[in-house]
Image (tube, rainbow, N blue to C red; front, side):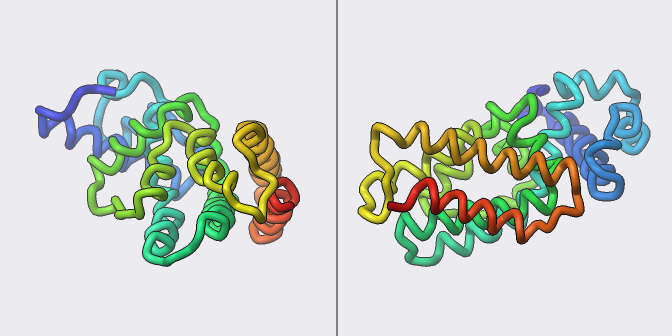
Length: 217
């Protein structure tokens, strides 16, 4: 991505490209995003976009962050509550699942796409461009939200459960449990992507049952 920090014009152009991408995603879906359409909508030549982004995947990852707004707001509310680590873990996953199954293509692109190992950069760039959308969280939720990838994010909220007598989580098995949890979630997300009419609440409920089966004693 282009260095825009000392050039307001470049920052404005970045926002135009992201806004155009967001509009296409909202109105026609992730599947219909293309460099040609983004360029036409933003009023630039196709080649100009490649001066700002490495490729279309980087641009769509950045635009996909818009679909985190509802999830982010729920995390903000949770940050104000005095929940313990166990309850927070299941609530965070529940918020995430409901939102991701509502927008499966954009969540799949963001968390499992080409730039899914650089979420910290993607998120911070987005909120630098759209500061009004940034929400303040508690320290623990902040660390989770800005994790480098989904594995790091999930481990941030799973690791404290190793000290909880209600769980079977230990320091020795937490990495494996994290991988299993993410694999189960990804399978349900793929089901939603393959059949968008699959009931969102039913999928979220199914995943909660999976999590309790994996984690509870």
